[in-house]
Image (tube, rainbow, N blue to C red; front, top):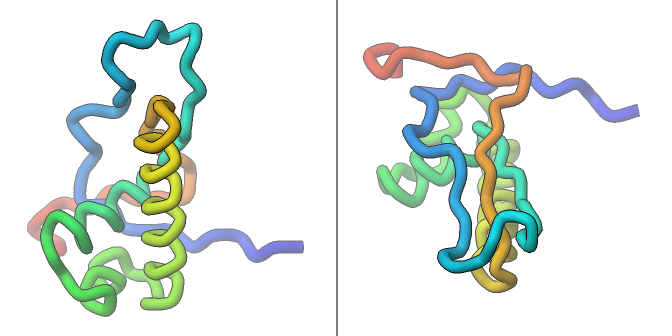
Length: 103
């Protein structure tokens, strides 16, 4: 039986929660679900340029867990880009939003 996920600290919800290839009707698209913690990992590491250790501290998780979340996010985004799939960013129950000043 897998362990339950600990709460991840997320700075804020994304402004846009759905991305799709242009010119393809929604009914013909497959969808990839990107969890909010995966979105936050991408934001901290790739957009903000933080090292994994500092990014993990901001999310209040271990560096190893951060690395797994980031790898999962990269695979999902690559799959969507290479195979023309939509990306839905979905909030799950194991995330806790934290104000930016707290980070």
